[in-house]
Image (cartoon, rainbow over all chains, first blue to last red; front, side, top):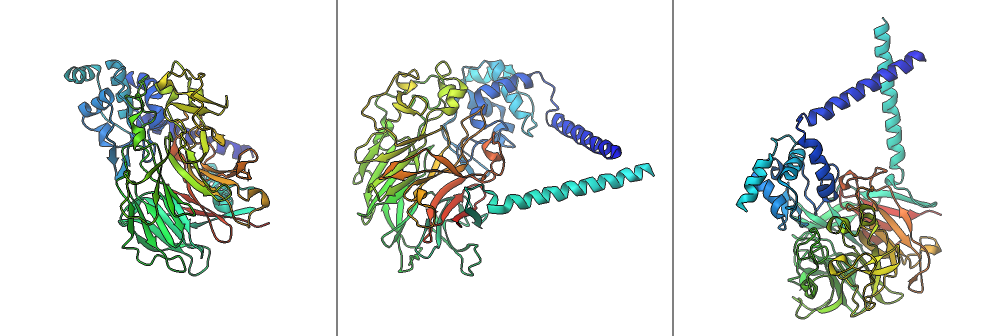
Length: 140
Length: 421
């Protein structure tokens, strides 16, 4: 019986180590932006885009593995600065709720949250810097 | 040798775990995974048919199901159980438009896209005579971003009632934005945010020859005709974002619970008050919307109608059905079933809904508290993100034998719920 308990304990610990490796693997980016970005995400983005970035069918687009998030940074920054009320199509599905502009956020907050989103939910893409946000904001 | 033992033991453990998980799976499949009141049972009569929205059942128990997304270029399914094995197969698909609404009345099947309403003549078995050539009775309805779907019901006098959802959350100058005020004299209301009435037998009607039957309804998906009161009843989807737009007035928890999802009895000319007010089910009051000077306490103009029942916020009532069958126990007779599609706007609290609720009626009015009737559609106990739900209830219909049918627009299951005594 003791042996059995030991084996179960061993299996569980292997499983949890695996899970941890997997978790940290998906956010291998060590930028301090990630933590700060998560806080911004939780307050401003999560209510619609959901805790796992998966969005809501027909309404709020998912932030996972989509060119809107992983692609052109200028376009992405502009979605936050100007909002988006036209609706988007991702993988053949239409999402139509209006995205409000969040231009009251600072350049640093926008860079943090975009860096977080581009490196969470299975995403992996380069960081967004505050300077990049500033440059896009200056262009209007 | 010891190592070898461990290997065998580990394999054994994995095997046991697998056995248990399969056993659980089997238990879950009882009643198609649903939890029901004593004496009821459920089965999935169709699976994976597409984004099944509303459903109509003909006199022989055959189903017409509307799809939120086309399958093979078609938007409506006709399903039958020819071999009587309890499973319904797609007999054919028709109509090149996706959408939600479908209803059978007086020898016709009515179906709506997000802009138009069609009707198909039925034969004596209530099968469509010519699926390719419907009459277009309504056209040109607004379908902008948000709340695009049109639901419909037909009364005894051949009038068709269609909801036109508001293309806005609360008619703010900037939709869903931080502290953005409401637009004065909300201009959306002239052509959306209400119910319009059309004649069943006239072609190509639109705003100019339809009747603006009721207004101040943000978005209605579930609606039904009540033959006791001979009137329309609708479930409104209440507004979102009280906290994210007005954080100084509402905390996250208040924003998760408010406002109520309301059941309204609708008479000609009624105004339910959107976007100027919402119904607070905790204070049991009509409250002035923050976009129009409200603070969470100021009451709204009393001219707006009261709901006949109020449910917790954001649960998304997508189906409403007054039960007129004889199969279920007496308490269900003439009461209302409501399919709650399930919320997304309740974080940081877990999401709510994802079940079919019931509220008893007597003499055309609710006669008791509402209760959860069928739950377990989501397949998980706690839902933090809508996509964790494997199934979401959407449409409701009653079959000729008095069973209740429920559609799911995630994986496309159709559930049949029966009472077995």
